Image 1 (cartoon, rainbow, N blue to C red):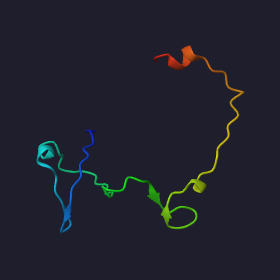
Image 2: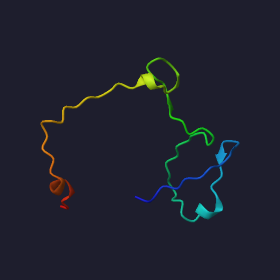
Image 3: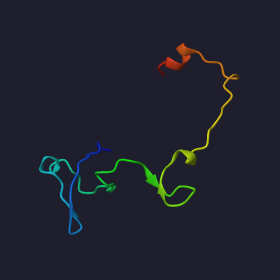
Image 4: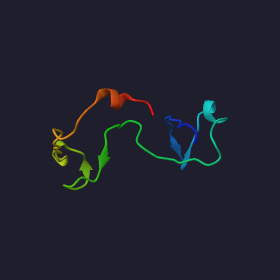
Length: 79
């Protein structure tokens, strides 16, 4: 699997222009994900309805870690 290429483009008549510097490296079949270039905030349909994600949409997760034994050497061991 190749690496991802990211760039901003303008949609003109349903067509997206690929910048010249990427034309030779773009494979014949690609996956396209569209996102607004000017808005980098996460958006989805939250529990409360359609809109932006707010702090009250998250539920806290508590995990009791006292039963786990942590060995730094074992955690960093290369296998």
